[in-house]
Length: 256
Length: 329
Image 1: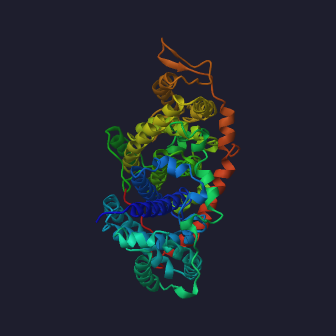
Image 2 (image 1 turned 180 degrees about the vertical axis):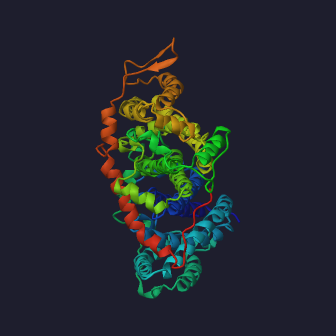
Image 3 (image 1 turned 135 degrees about the horizontal axis):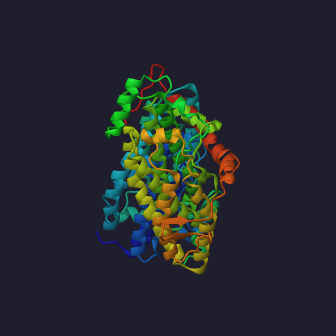
């Protein structure tokens, strides 16, 4: 299928939001380095963080080929309002159950998203998606196992996990916030759209949540945390970016 | 990454082998002499077990505490390449801790006990991690020179007598050699970069030279005690020998980059082949190892915070019918 000029604008918007999500969640997950509840989890979060960073880099690379800046400049030189990540990825790591629940909701959505994108009419994206979905499969497996384990392990773990679920669910719904080009993405076969993704995601996560003995809130009763896709962010994003770019901005033209 | 185990000089030598069956002891020593590795279920003198637990445990603690000063720079690493490399590097260090705790567990002390002893201050870790990584350049110097020092020590110890520790060290050394390459590459970029970058890395070298010289520990007190540990291949080289090896390999490389080492007396004596240097301040070394360094409190507080914060997860994972199983290494 031929992609129109508008289609390319839509692809850029889609790539930015996905790459920004991956970069920011990778950055957050890396904050567990040295602090995990068991050494093995420390190592697991670090592995996933490295994958996420690699995914964001690969997506920024496609943007570079479409005429945007190089990945380092895109990632390290924009302000918060120029980012299109969702609110879910922006929050500080918090307690382990928060990070785990975020990881569960996010990676199940990402697995399905990249599975859908593997059929995209935009070949560079479908090529990357095929590779990335193979890696994310292990991320979602990791999350699913932990949710199942901790959802019913002890009274304390059950309460913690349910509270984390209640806290993260409105944020997780913000993953599916539509961008301004949603219709173009669908009509040109680039991406089937956020509604389809959300429906598949609900079906996937609700099964695991139920098996874990936890309860998903009634989705219609929840107000999703929206705005991220249009540059409106939580108070946490700009400080994260300030920290992330602290050294890079000493001299952006220098080779580090 | 790790320097050398700190051996208590006050321990009397005859304690090492008292109460041991002389025939078994002779057989044990003959095996080591012949190059055999001692395995977890083999007979070993009590003191051999004790010294090894202490040494491997200190090494494991050093890895996990060593992840902290560099770990704080993951979120600030400039650019994808450095960010990814530093994440992988620090992750390796945590992986080394996991490997080493397992090796120590084969001698009969559980990981939980060891970590509790770390937090309570009962067991030690490498002194260098009680110094702060003030700038990005400090992480470059640590990755290059501290990891280089660790390789000198660990290569020596990988030829030791205890099988699980040697096997862990062999694997660790391969990973550390990547860290060294990463650290060197990072230092080269800074040392050949802009004026600001060159100043950053020179300042970091000045800050880190003292910990680097402290890294291998003070000159050994060549007591009967040390000789026995060397005979048992628990200790493989003297602190001074390792310091000399390190200086010989790395001082020329540092000078090649145009960096200045803050010791006017540092030079190689061509007739002896040995490096001469200003004697490091061993009083400071002792003060820091005993808790009074710039970051001791902070490092232990972070570790304690992580342990306490994660306790519910570990408790939740424990099944009622679970039994403790020593890992196979």
